[in-house]
Image (cartoon, rainbow over all chains, first blue to last red):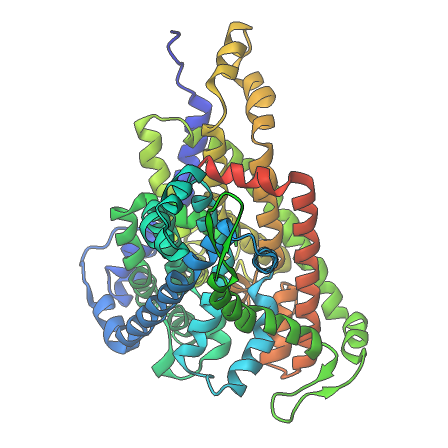
Length: 273
Length: 296
């Protein structure tokens, strides 16, 4: 029972990292709470004297309300598609003995290695041909497809942990694969389900590349596009720009506060991509 | 729909996988096939694509900017691994402790992960702005304050921002792995009189082998395909000094409307990413990678 000596060196290192992480976040928050003139006069490091929320209000009224809505639509649709398609897929991956299913699983594993950057040209081609260019559906479809391999991997991992005895017990009662799926597999993989919901929602909310090459007009702009345009068009309005950054991360911060565990696991999934 | 094995267990058939397979095939695999096809074609986005054999590839390998972009991609990737690996291993092992202050600090450390790459880049672009950002008030540290003006400082900014954004992710990976190291090993080492440093190098590091492999793969694939950061922070500049391959592909396609050549770069990216992933799977084994994930 030796008492642990505090590790001063590690503690010091972690404080340096805290400074590096905290400094830009501090600059961001402080800048958004003052007017452009005050920010230019005071510099990024000082604390504002006249607090104001004008930057947020201005951003929200200059299109970010619409971008928020668009992003929310994309996110809900992507999560919907993933939640509809991936659980049956994972169930088949774990339980099916069909060779075709095995092949499908291998294709999804291959999909893990496809960087989405590599397919933006053909994606542009396909969506233009399909008449879905500059349409939110055109953003939803590839975003969902590229979230699927990680989700399938996560969920089939969880489903694999369900013991064979439980399956056998249900089958003795004469349960069909369908009943097994709804009454045994789904209830027991709730943790995996919440992880894939969070993962796919993050992918959709933070998605940049597909909206960049597949949309154009203000009506289909998502938040990340709004940030990018803000930077290219009004890059000198730093308080306004940073307020937009804060707005873009608010929903995720809320999830972080209330569902930290599911979010962290979803983030691990981001690593899988 | 139902197949029955000897024990009478009813199993789902391929039908259950079919909808997802079709969807994934249409919107991920088909574009992948098309990018290969387009890499052998000339296409300006207006007329229909025209077969041109190896023309795109020929031009690509004669293009000095392309070769430079490959070199820059590799440089940024190596920088990423060199900076982020040691940092994330140390932070991960530190964060694996159960002390309360560590939990609170860790919660702050993970905030960069919540931001989109676009948000991170816009944030740093603002913080490092030559006229209104921090450098303008810290001449003693950064000279004339324009960190985007020379190649070396621009690359430094890109490497730093990537590290800022992704170190938390790798920290998370190592934290999970470090928590899974059996405590018995440390107790045994303490009885043998091994100090903290020796414990780290002889127990913790070897035990983190799988998580280190996983995170390195992610760094390499992520580094090679870095795009958003470059687009927002440097636009590939000054000149073409930070034009890495993924960004060059975007330029070729959506600025020069040379979709064929862009596709060839895309194929190159897929090839490199796949080869690296295969090497990693070979080195580590898929099963063991999965068990690393489960420890989290």
